[in-house]
Length: 460
Image 1 (cartoon, rainbow, N blue to C red):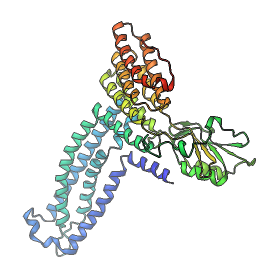
Image 2 (image 1 turned 60 degrees about the vertical axis):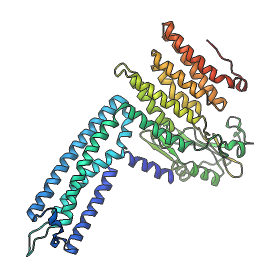
Image 3 (image 1 turned 180 degrees about the vertical axis):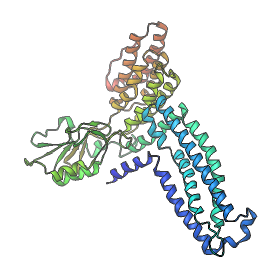
């Protein structure tokens, strides 16, 4: 249930309508409250408002209608500017970056402010009347509309500054990396110095590896996907509870971010019972998984990695030709991988309190993240000496912080492929010499781990 709520909240955060809708609802309630206060305490008879302005019913209507007309016009302009910014972001940074701009709270609040002021003025106008023996002008409500109009001028200035700075390449890369940092802290909270880092040392110390598990005595039943889509989130706690209650072993061949086709095996349930699983139990299992039309970063850390990669690859394209943005992305990716070297990754198997295996998953690995981060940039930037050199320098920084054999192998693999691709793509010996020099620095950084992991090196 918690996973579905988080997924729903992520959907709301990345929509343009949620925050403005909340602000409009609050404005409607505020307008009724201020009009009630005006009527209840007869504030129209107080002379304090005469210090600021003194208008009758017609004047109040004119003030409110002028503000309403201005705000709806400014709101239209703000929407137009936002659409232009989204178009520029999509063409220069990639369509997947639209989500980051749409979830920008500043843009949502600005649009909500203008629309709310417009709705507020319309609601207050209807309270101004001249029927009866005495005219009624809600002075407090009209005064608040004037304050709101002045406030909206500041909001408009902020919006112009914010939208112009948010589409700058450096700001886009920094914002994506900031989100990546938060996801790393969320998905990999344990550090190498934390007692809870490696659950395999205690809870999984005597457990066999997934590859060596013998589950041939169990009967397997596939739970097929009713429709195609991306696996956005997995409620692993609920899935583990279902497996315990039914004495099952559940194999999940996908992780968040993978694409599932209709009719494909989504989950394999293994049990001692030869009878087929009922449709009701299949629905229980399927309800722990969330499929959607697009990838989301809720449980998919590689999604944010791919955003930085897409920005870098587009920057290296001949149409844009912006290598400095690509270098900035490489720096951020290197910082993220350095951060991950000191984090504990989830195991592929999950056991219950009794020590029985219940879940077999496909967890994210350091090698997979490293490949996602550097493979495409290496391929698209193979003809750029600056890109190859920066990749080598980044790998050198990561090599200085490797903490296990998987990280060692991942860094070594990337360095070997960069030097191999550069040899084939570049003809100038001076250019190749610069890359080889950086490669040697990376190898020297890995050398303290040679005796531990026993890997030969091809030193140039």
